[in-house]
Amino acid sequence: MLATFFSTALYAKPQRIISLAPHLTEQVYALGAGDKLIATVDYADYPEAAKALPRIGNYQYISLESIISLKPDLVLVWQQGNQQSLAQKLRALNIQVFVSKPKRLDNLPKQLAELGSILGEQETGQRLSQFAEQQLTQLAQQYQSKSKVSVFYQMWHTPLRSISAKSWIDDGIRLCGGENIMAEAVAPYPLLSEEWVLEADPQAIIIAQWEFEHSWKQWPQLQAVQQQHIYHLDPDKAHRLTLRTLESLKQLCSMLEKSRKKTHPDKLSGTRAYTSEEKSSI
Image 1 (cartoon, rainbow, N blue to C red):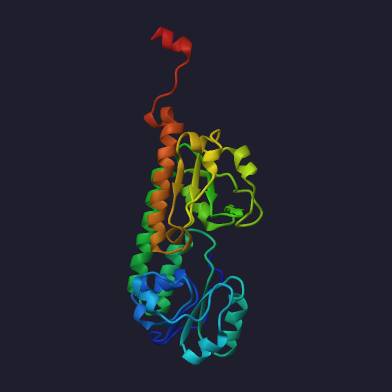
Image 2 (image 1 turned 120 degrees about the horizontal axis):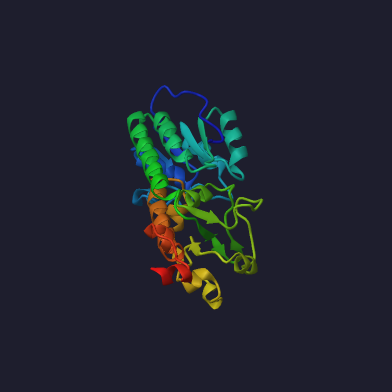
């Protein structure tokens, strides 16, 4: 569920909104309230209009003084790192705060509906929420019960970083019928060695980073290398929980389906492999 919900009802549409996360900025625009945004943070670059907004910080530092000087009537906060304590300071100053921390993939439709209500865009919020819910359901029905494909999901290469079942990204892998080889890791975004991946020998490698350089081809013994099942996802679409995540999920499911067709051809065709004895009797 979402970490913290908006606790105080607004009696009018907020007219001066500050968004402190790229995914929240994108959601505000999707809900039709982008013209009310007065500031955001670094890397909030979608849609194009967001690039023109003033910047008041990044994931490491947010300027409380800048927020106060802009006199917002609503601040959208991503509950991670220093923003958790920042939300408390803003509330103490009687500034309305909405805190988002998506922990699961199904938080997307829920947050679109809730944020739409807060922004005074209830109808749009409900429509987008229903659309997201339908898209997730359709993908699950299409892929979730298919033959499993083991997956290594690479968020970064130096150091090598992946995701565990504690990240909502893992929900997307499972929705597409994949099995995350790092699912049991303790941290949501664990560090690991290349040797660990070699030992696990995944059937597909998904690289979600802008620098699409990797060294996996130097290990031709990997299934993913042999079958050319090394794929690239746009990290902005894949890692920001927005409507564009649905597009990324469709791409991920398609990638795993390609791997599935090579690794489980008999199951896909509805037939099974025959033994040599059976073949001789046909």
